[in-house]
Length: 154
Image 1 (spheres, rainbow, N blue to C red):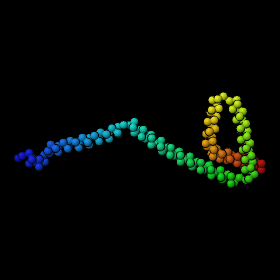
Image 2 (image 1 turned 180 degrees about the vertical axis):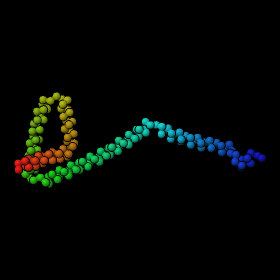
Image 3 (image 1 turned 135 degrees about the horizontal axis):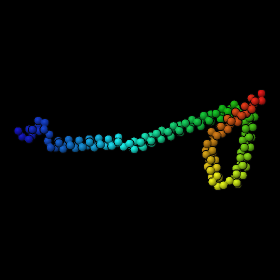
Image 4 (image 1 turned 90 degrees about the vertical axis):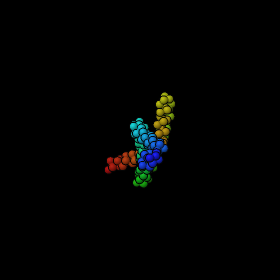
């Protein structure tokens, strides 16, 4: 029997053995990488945190849009159901409030220290950025007070 005849009966050649070893090393390398990824709890936590953060931001944006839409609908509904004289009085009252606020702001600016002025400006910017919900709330409050006042006089 020669070496070639032995190889035909199931004994691998040195080249086949090298290929098997190389294939096994590749498989082992992939397995080790997979196990290392599973064992890296810190990386998994970061990935999970990023996913949860993104999901929360999406939900917050959706909820914010829905709230603004509902507030605008409420404003339109209140305006539609409020009689014109009441709307005029509300507009006059709003103008008076703006004038009084401007005067009070000027007085406060003259008397307030600089850190307080900075914080006040920042708060005013937040209010300006969210006008619609604040206006809707003011209109609803005014309508509620007017209705309550009207019912109280009966």
